[in-house]
Image 1 (cartoon, rainbow, N blue to C red):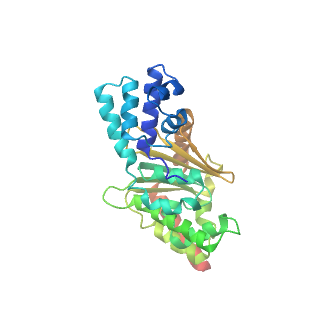
Image 2: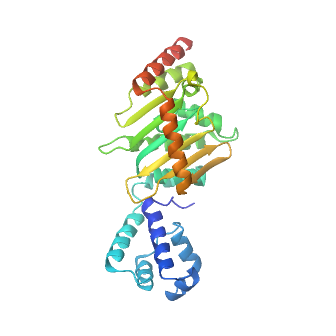
Length: 288
């Protein structure tokens, strides 16, 4: 499995496709002009492969790109070729579903993430014990303990994007059910909810209480990623029993943003959410 494509790699593929279409060239004709296999050009445009510098220069020549465009796409290629930020993920790729691995590669470049969960505390703010209990419950019973532990390492490492000098911003809406369901043990839950009180200022956490009734987030898990590269379109990750689905279509993203705003309006404000979390934590503590 290849390392997931970065935001820069995806953007490079899109820009090259736009230039080819503007030059009124099909993939086979464009590839033939520079003695490249059409399948290779397809992999470049589909953001599976970063082109060699010589290949990119040849494509830009064939498409009649101006100097500013050439300079911009060459710089974009250099960013796409740099895997340093996500290099830690490579040893774990064989343990991850491909779409989930692709999402993690994109998450590394997030500026803001909007997350809603009905049944679980989101992975980016899970404690290690809570995450281990979740993975043990959700993965097939035949999964070796070592594989669960490798997935756990990935989940914990993902949380690094919320720390440091310029951390990502995380906005979370969870259902009260995620607070009350005993995952692992009452002691694990008490520690998990206690950890939510120590989140950084870059994390906004709101809870939809039971008394608000049915709400738009009850159908499943949703994450919307807004990138540091302001020209990169948002991406959404939808998770269900059927697996992970990455969505980039503009109309769907607009609906997801609208759904998230509805959830925020249905949820308690941050102060009241914190009070509810603390009350539920005491409930778990008494049950420990």
